[in-house]
Length: 251
Image (cartoon, rainbow, N blue to C red; front, side):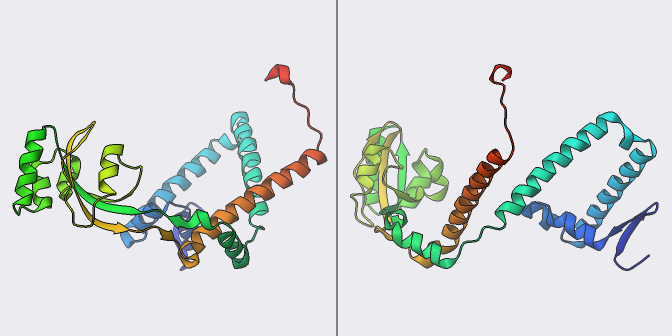
């Protein structure tokens, strides 16, 4: 058996290149699973089974069944359409100057709002909230108090809500959180969920993302836009090239 042949099934061969192509067609997580020696062996075994089924199907003459030939025709048409679209969009390119031009022409799109990082404690009873507030004012750590008393799932993280922007939280909570200074403890805040205590840990002021920060993501966005435009323009020319009739009554 040649070095690049990993398995033989009858007279058919499965090569290293075929195994590699099969792996590369997989989602990234699945590809990682088959990248180790044991995984590759499992993949080869699966490819052997598929080859056995293929050979058996040919031996039984399934490749000549009318139903199979009809499905094959549909599959070939579908793949040809997909290939045509792929060939069309891969001709589209976008350079850094176009990306830079869009960035400079749309400054509002790259502004970042004020963000607050806060912890909170949520309880159902106002009196309980007052007792917890007094404990914290007396020196109890806010995060520990959240773990002990809060009914919000964030209690597992000491009440940590991470960074959020204005409008992400309910109005009453939002108004208090964005008016606290870093390190400041709130009064009791009533919302539809219950009674909250809030402590702001950090703030990020509004700003503008730099070109380097958004360049790659923006380039991909603009490329997809350009590809979509190319697709529309090209299909418009095809509509003029080939006659089209639509039977509205049959739809």
